[in-house]
Amino acid sequence: MTTRNAARHEPFRLGMLLRDTRYRNGTIQAISFILLAISLFWLVDNTVRNLAALGKDFSFEFLWRTAGYDISQRPIDYTSASTHARAALVGLLNTLIVAALACITATILGVFAGVLRLSSNWIVGRLMTLYVESFRNVPALLWIIVVAAVMSEAMPAPTAFRGDNPDASMLLWDSIAVTNRGIYAPSPGFSTDLGQLDLPFGSVNLGLLAIIAVLAGSFAMHRLLVNNARHVQSRTGRRPQTWWKSIAVFAIPLLALLYALGFYLQYPELKGLNFISGLQLRNSLIALWIGLSIYTGAFIAEIVRSGILAISRGQTEAAHALGLRPGQTMRLVILPQALRIIVPPLISQYLNITKNTSLGLAVGYMDLRSTLGGITINQTGRELEGMLMMMLIYVSISLIISGVMNIYNNRIILKER
Image (cartoon, rainbow, N blue to C red; front, side, top):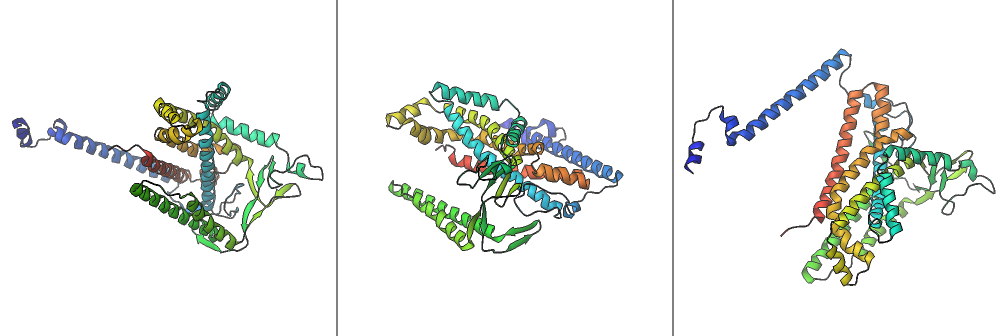
């Protein structure tokens, strides 16, 4: 104790910044920060000097120029007369759409494959092993190209649906057509137009915003019902049924709004050499969606399998002793506990899907990489600005996905008392 007090009252000397543990950590952090600041300053200064030597400046003014190119798959209104900012927004929406679809289908496929790989049936288990080992050991780009080739070569042309005895027929009561140009399906329409909301990047349909607002309100009411049921259960030991209330909370407001907006479906119709009306899912979207799903699903299957194997065998035996069937045991006992192990590596797979959407360039899918990071950069010569924007957008998407999944992981994690 005397030695520590003596060291504490010792006069300060510069050598103590590195030798004394009271100052060493702060000194190292300060030196690291100074070196990082110097490196960033040199990088920015060097970039500015090189741009000046090339006669360029650093500006995002190019975003408001006319794009001058078409985008085949566009979820919002867009023409070649739109701005590069609008084109980047369309590419971003295309990226988010295919990423969301691939995350959902890859998760479903991975969970089924992971569970079935542990099946006691020898054939089922070996088939799932064959799927996992085959798809995860081949690059995702090859699967995307294979799916695109199958869709383009094996599917019938739109003209095959013509005539009294057509060579091909539509599915689901003549509502869906699978062709070599893509899949044509019914698209939603509204007879009542609420107008458009003008934004810097374009206009947004107010009817769509109203549907989103109703769904958000329904979700908030559902959360209140669930929280109230938990509160009642903690007080009385009995949990009230909320499933029918949740269905009503979601269905009634949404159906009422759709009725007020005059909701109807536009079915695809064959006119000339192609289908018109309806919703067209182009081969590029389908190839990227299916390719990423089957590739990432193989990795998720291994994550699910390892999570299930990490649960003690006694949990399964206890569930069987209570009279639960194997399916109920897996759904009610094993998987809920395995989620605590599955979710952290699952986040990485979702991030991989989001970043791998850039592979759509190989099959002509106009995502963020093809629009902002491709044609826009080539036309404007703004490589630095375009790449910085694209990197910032990808980082933001990844952080949002990680944040949402981490929130979910914190909710299901085992709490110690």
